[in-house]
Length: 403
Ligand SMILES: Cc1cc2nc3c(=O)[nH]c(=O)nc-3n(C[C@H](O)[C@H](O)[C@H](O)COP(=O)(O)OP(=O)(O)OC[C@H]3O[C@@H](n4cnc5c(N)ncnc54)[C@H](O)[C@@H]3O)c2cc1C
Image 1 (tube, helix red, strand yellow):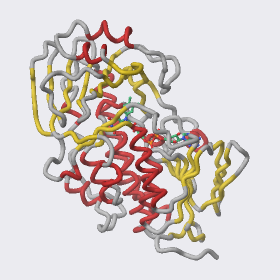
Image 2 (cartoon, protein in one colour):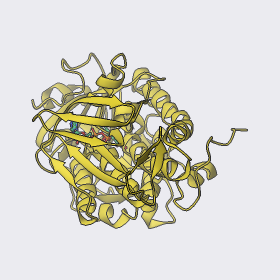
Image 3 (tube, helix red, strand yellow):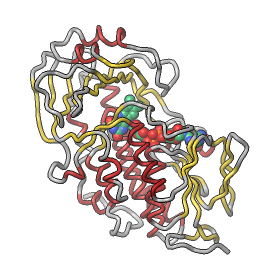
Image 4 (cartoon, helix red, strand yellow):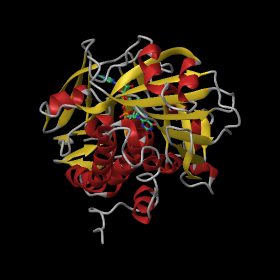
């Protein structure tokens, strides 16, 4: 019989101590930090051969994501990189300011929105995991999962295997774990291409800490100036999908995007023209509502379970919330089926609201009523979310009924 650790729970008569996490991105690494904190023995398997510091666009973590990080004691690890955002404004296509306001929870610096590259966030979380003694194995790609009554086995492309009591599929939008558990769940195009880049052109007088959204004639554009004077920017454009769903296309797409921005009297075109390095593009993609999240001893989290279009800027924050709530569920519920059910009960309404709102914004296009301000909406933590995330507050078997 296994030695039962502090966080161990019983599944079908077997004590759970060992968890394998597939994917060392945001969801997987954060889940590993949370599960270790709850007393589990966790190993992360990541397909990328190194910490993947150069992968991906920049992203913003909302106050809700920063709150989740704080529960993991990982605030300092993440705030060592990127920069804080505390206000936002909305411009129309003539550059006229339509709205301005504070962004997120501004009174507590640990909860300020944060802007950083996805690779920087991955690296920061992986370094923190390594510092805490959590094994993160790089260059190991999951190929298959066998889900038995007494255990789960991860089969890797190099022929090796790992046995565990639980397996978490945190392997992102194109999850292999999902294709093995629920092959019918397929991501779909949400109607927009996302262009992004980093520019040497910083609009005069724009302070750091401000993110600007521009409702342009043919795009929704956003940018923020880093303390080093580099402008991080994105543009969302309603058009047909790029050929390979979800893939970042390495071609420089500057000349494709610029004509769509030139008709506006805003800083967008100059920012894009001043980009350092290529202008990249990817498809906005989301998963259908109701995607099954678990079978047997395997559970999907993060984008693997509930990828949303990036319009609300909440995918990474949702992944961080998942990590905390899952570890609390396994810690506080009497057995794994109950823990999975509680986790899903707490998480599904929230993440599916994000899929719906974000997908709605993308599909409605740049003419939609609130291209930027909606960024703040799903992120504002309410009392129920604060309780859900608070590490020392036990997780209830079911979320309280909404009044
Ligand atoms: C253009 C764009 C802009 C975005 N902007 C924002 C934003 O501003 N704010 C925000 O919160 N979110 C944003 N997002 C969404 C955010 O990036 C995702 O929600 C987030 O990365 C999800 O984290 P994850 O860990 O679930 O998946 P991922 O970050 O995709 O990580 C999955 C990991 O699994 C690994 N992996 C994949 N397959 C295997 C395998 N078979 N075996 C082992 N490992 C594997 C991958 O290498 C990767 O490291 C944006 C997304 C895009 C595309």
